[in-house]
Length: 385
Image (cartoon, rainbow, N blue to C red; front, side, top):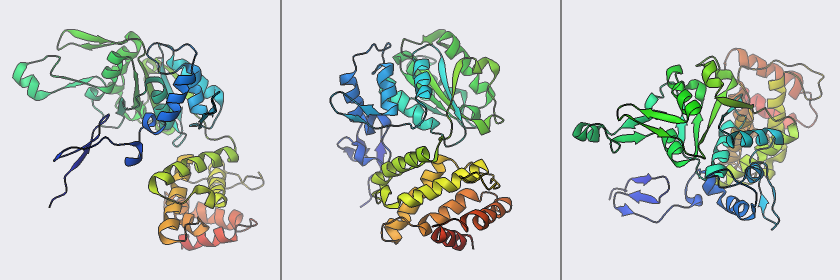
């Protein structure tokens, strides 16, 4: 008997070709949206929040910042930190959304731009799904609107035939839209945002109408520093944004905390062992990535060459998660050097010629001489063989 095809629809349950089933819960999807995964925290914040809220905001700016940075409410509810970094960065980002200026989160790959964008939208609007994913092939319709061509051919241009983009829906509902990887979108498509952000209106010339934004509407965009040469933002569009730069973690301790926290969250969804079982290996991954990124060892005594990759915090999370999966399925469940060696090699050696030389030199001059790292050195040598 054939297995029914499963279709997940936003805001609904699971449907199959045999009919609707019960609604999905956060534990039944691989990666629930922020407003679902942290619904309890958002509800607790809303109940305790007695500060002024901008129009159509679910929380006050103070509560939004608390949701991202973490804290303890008067009733004892613990709000977990979603972003580990300078508080002022979050405060500026939240304050920007409370004005009529759009927010651009800028930074190198792996600095949690998408993560922060999603949680900001979830806290402000209760919905992080009004998303335009930027690629080299993103069409203008993804930002403005499209057409249901069956309706268009049958009845001509009409509001029923119009298919609103996430940005148009956010404008009409007073919510927060998101545009990921803005600098990957073609320049002519990027510039369709200028009128939306400056005039707060989206013309529909086919109907002789326009959609005007209602209070509460705003837009969060993300862009990578390294992508500025792909489709650099025009000066006219950049002026419509308040740019907030998300830095790499300032200290090894902060980066270890971020990696540990995210690995634990991912591990729970994948039924992997708890991250603290491999706390030493997590610190080693972070140390290696930071030293190769910075071009100098932690003690400042030895300069090292940097590979071509970014070696971001996000990549460290991926390496540790992959190592935990190896330990769980092919080991005893305890994260060890052999479990992360191959992942580190894959993250560091992007250019097989140049990066391999950098990695071998780092192993021999730094890792080999470091006290307590002999097992890590041997594992990395075996993975590199």
